[in-house]
Length: 372
Image (cartoon, rainbow, N blue to C red; front, top):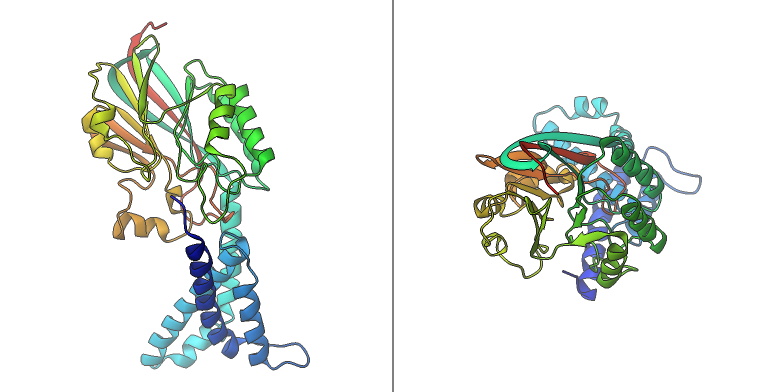
C-alpha cells in the first residue's frame, strides 16, 4: 500500500496546523518569560510556529515531540476546565505551577521513550506440541519489525549476533518489516551480512511486511527485487503464500503474503494434508483463529510494535480491535499457539512508550525424533 502525493502533502500539513493551534493557545497564555524585545504572548506564538512547522517529515522526532507536547497541553486544558467547573481553578494552577508542569512531564516522557527504545530484551517462550520435533525440542528465534535506524543499527547488529550465539537457534524466522522506506543502503547491506553469517541448521525464513519495500511517506532506496536477490545470496528463504518442508519432511513451514496484498486464505495455503508440526509466518496478527483451524500449530507475527506509542496499543486492543493479539503468546485453540513480537526496532520515531524492543526465542517441545 502506498499513499498519493496529495495525501502525503495534505495530512501532515493539517496535522501541523492542529499542533500549532493547540500550542499557540497554550503558550500564548503560559509562556513564563520572553527574550528582550518580545512579550510573553509574542514569544509563545513564535515557539508554537517553530515547533509546529519546522519539522519537514511527519516521521521526524521533532514532529513527534511537537505532537506529544500538543497532546499533553490538550489534556491539561481538559483538566483545567474540569477544575474550573469544580471551583478549584486556583488550586489546580498552584499544583501545576501555572502550567509549567506540562513541559517538564513532556520532557521526562520523551526521555523515558528514547531509553526504552534502545533497550533490547530477549523474550523466551516454551510451547509443547504432540508432534515429533528433532531431538525433542525445536528452538526458533524470531526477528520482527527491526526497522533499521540510522543511529541504532550497529548496536542492533551486536545484539543480534550475541543472541544468536547464546541461544543457538535451530531456525530463524523473520516476520516482516526487517527493512523500511528509511533504510539506508549501508544498513541494508549490514543486515543482509548478518543473515549470511548466521545460518541455523534448519534455515532462515522470511515473509514481507507492509514497510519492507513499500512507499510510505518516502521512497525506499531498495526494491522488492533487491531484497529477493540479497536474501537469496544470504541463504534466506522467502515464503509468499507457499509452504516448504524441513527436518526430513517432519516439519512444514508456511508463509503468508502481507495482509495489504491479495493472498490465499489460511485454508487454501495449508490445504495439503500434513500430520507433522506446522509453523506459519505472518506479518499482521490477523485471522489467527482461521490459521489455527487450518492446521497451523504455531503462528508467528509482528507488525503491532506492542503499540510503540502510548496509548496506541490500548486503542488497537480495546477500541479498534485491529489485531487479534497485540503482543505476547496465546493458545488460540487447544495445542495451537500464536506468538506476536513487539519488534526489535521502532518505525519513524526512535521512541517507545508502550511495549518493548524484543528478540523472541521460542522452544517447541514435542516427541523426540531422529530427522535428517
